[in-house]
Length: 250
Length: 272
Image (tube, rainbow over all chains, first blue to last red; front, top):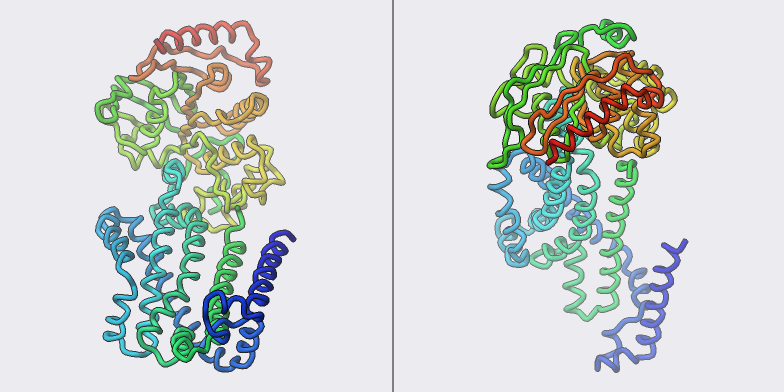
């Protein structure tokens, strides 16, 4: 009860305060702005409803990018994490480069990706995959390495092969770590999608944000952000649900 | 695998898969060091088939290393370790099952599936492996707990499942590393009785490492007292035989007490 009630209460208080501050013009005065630039929650909700078909259409575009990007991120992240665990040579070779790849500002390489992959869905997918594979690879590697060495020894005296140790002991031990990485990845995905769309797109929620900002459609801009974060929350919820179904021993 | 079921019947000491039925342990001139640190100086030990040897010594004297050497998880730097005549690590691995200090039950598997791990590793299907392990569950007082998750079991129950997991492997030699160290005194006493009974019903060659002299003398035929690092033999004692199956009765026997005191003295001497 408390887990739901308190955050809901806090959200209601914040929205209420915002509503009062925006609708009385106090917030706009404070920021020295025209009042249409500072929409109230009610106005945002109204815009959400009025632009529902446009938002749905673009949300679908962005969701597809996110799901594809996450799909690649999961495959590559789990693959690299496992490969680096199984081979010390691979780990020493790839680990520094993987960490270094995360220090490159994604906004800088996004334009290059557009040049390479064109204006379609792929540069966005590539940006998302680039951002999201990292937490997955790191968490999978950490999880596989967290196995008690005594357990591996015990398995060897119980006639386990290397792959049996991997699948019967190491992989299940790594699962909770993997899910932590997956939670991080799914909340990073919308950020990647928006970056990807900002560089060059003719649809999608990131594209709409850019457009509405230029047109001073501030209410719809906030409405777009609401949709974007709702999608991230839904993905986060799915990961949490999957974790609860799979990791039953915790 | 109809032939395998027989392996676990009470009286039989019949072959485990891939190894001879019974195997003794023979250690000659064994030495080991970690870098500069000499952990085992020079050790000669032999355990006859179905003999139970206790290794007692101060903490950090290399007893766990010794068990890993016996089990084929490590290669000796000097000297030889042979199990049933096999000196190569693969041959030793095939003949020895290892029970670590902590039970290390896999929390995502039911008790029965934990116990059946060795069978599953050998490619036996889940149903057949469970059937085979279930037989031991009822024989060793764990009936009804087959489907329990390890977190639902008490410390003593977990150790029983861990020991059955070692037994189900069907290896002639068992290496037990302080199996009851984490248990409270009452549970430990119960478990010692239980293990003594289990070994009477299903005899194996056992090397048991423990801190507890009383435990060693109650469970083993013979105990070797090791010195502080680098480990060497201080004294070798035979446990009084025959011992009463009931632990309280056995350990209060005057002869038992006398041997215990002698072992204690050797241990003190070796710790210096």
